[in-house]
Structures are given as structure tokens and as C-alpha cells.
Length: 77
Image (cartoon, rainbow, N blue to C red; front, top):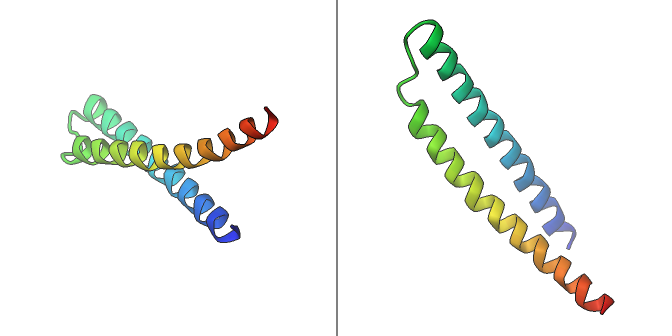
């Protein structure tokens, strides 16, 4: 069980890092596009893939934690 907790903490930190990179990339792309009239070419595709992976991995984490929470609710009933 301790291994799974460490694994989930690692996955959560990975999601935080991925979200931070995505927000930073999009922010700099917007700044470059409106201030310097030049955007990062690959920014839209990379941010789209990052958003997709954040959604998929985040859903896995939430479903795992929700299953544990439902066990707690059924015990209290």
C-alpha cells in the first residue's frame, strides 16, 4: 500500500509539472504573438497533447481515489 501511495504522489507531481509547463508554454506563446507578432510554431499541438494527457492521467487518479472513497461511504452506512 505504501508503494501505491508513493506512486500516486509521483503521478500527482507529474500532473502538476505537466500543467505548469502547459500554462507557461501557452502564456509565452500569447505574449510572443501579440507583442512581437511571432508565435511558437509547435505551441498549440504540444499544449493540446499535454491537456489530453493531463485529462487521461487525472481521470485515472480520480477514479482510483473515488473507489476508495466509495468504500468508506459504504462502511459508514
